[in-house]
Length: 107
Image: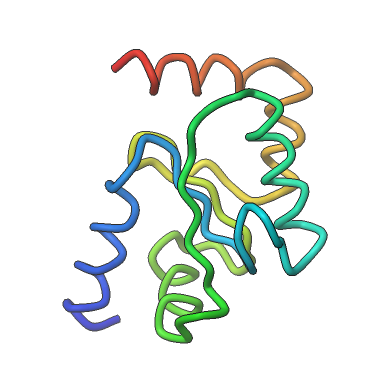
């Protein structure tokens, strides 16, 4: 990964308390896993930003290396990588995601 790409992703990850790297956007998810992530974050009522990886091939590939996670979507809360769709579902079901979001929004 080039230093420029790392800096670009650093900036995207820190632009908001919650950032979702996904295929498509909030209004038009382009895959079921991205849609799951949008639905879960929307249910929580938390403000979040999305980055459409389909619009930028460099980011689409770079985010996988950045997080050392092979799939998209990817969720970051307070700059920390949380996981993909399956992890988000698990964290939501056991109540941990709500706590993470509350802490992030309070900081």
